[in-house]
Image (tube, rainbow, N blue to C red; front, side):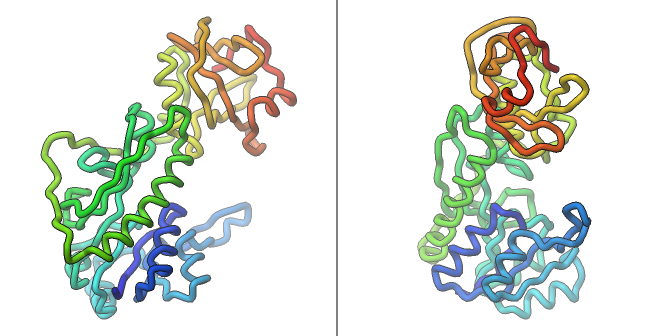
Length: 302
């Protein structure tokens, strides 16, 4: 098929690769514009932009698709279908209608649960036991369109957003190629009205850890916000990002170090920190971190 691909972050790259490997004709790749990044604050292309250039594909990065000019340029590609995954711009109706078969979205949740911007983070933070991928026919509403294909997977007890992100990205790549192969035989199913939840964009204000909360909530916060923005605590005037954890046995004052493996007491129960990061340093496994900054039993954090 002649495909317009629309995506921006790392999550979208395996999907683009899968479409190319399957032999589809990529008419153009749409992504967010390069933005300043790094110490020099030089414009850096997005992961999809960089990968598309490596593949020799045409890249377009408009700041908006609302103008008649941009919509005409999109329609002139005469695509059979558009595949959208974590693109980052709202698609006007003229864009949705331009390809012969419309626009398909790869959404990282089991719709109608977790419509919106941060479905992977929210699934972990809410304690969901499973999530998955939906291939959805796009319409004007926020992730409201009918679903063509869906596949579920279990969320691991120690899984972080980064871990789940990679598994769902690979699943999305596999499922979209399946959807395009079977497109004429698929029957879009309207989403049920019950069970709708919204995965609101992550606010950095959510990232500070409060150890007076139950261990289950603290653990889900740490894993759900890893690697970005990273759940954090203050200790001796510096910020520590907590990047991986698991539930542990023990009790004590909230934030108290209970042993030499960095088990921390919560309001009820305890969590063991598995990976963390000091300001200006790279992430470290807890064992390595403790060699440079010992945190003895009885120390209070946060």
